[in-house]
Length: 271
Image (cartoon, rainbow, N blue to C red; front, side, top):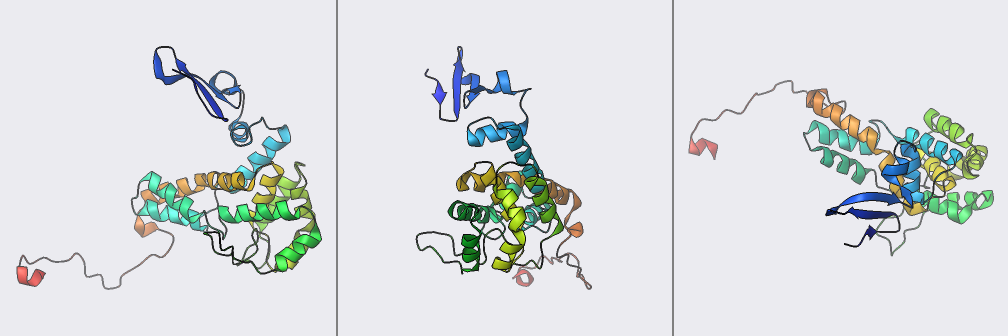
């Protein structure tokens, strides 16, 4: 049987079992012979997406971004969706799919990161282009299934000022010295926020970081979805164990609970 291969992956079959792989290579690297035990998960993740081994700076940047995004917290709509699935007894896959669906949108979700990365491609580090673009009202693309964004991508539509976690994340990632986007964003944040009329959001930092890692907007969108799943998973598990009475949102307490419905056995009454 011929070997199975794509641009990303190549497998050689076992001599006595054509349905099992004897060796697996990811972009030329022997996964179980060379990478396992020598490369970190972050380095392997970079290799999968970018097709090459990361530099030390790139690995540190991706690791820092992954930590910043791993758990957006229960205020985040995607995590909240997973929590609702968990407290309702949904399967693990259903909880994660709920998080992915809600976290895919253009308001704080992966689509917003993609749009922000497209802005980086068009504007680079040209402050005038950014100020003009941020001041303009978003226009819908009639050929796109997505509606026009309600705010400039990468900025918080409900924010009053840039939050502590956003500032801390930006300072840390920009200080790693990997690429120019994060450093430029750190230096010009206040001017960009003034042009947008909104504070910078975590999605804006993610877009700049993913650009500095060399990702395309499509790769950035996918990575953003992936990196936020751990928090959704653990919050769903917590709510599944805690029960609906301990759910932290929208608890309903009945003052005059009628108790279980009473059945009389009468067909007439049942109707």
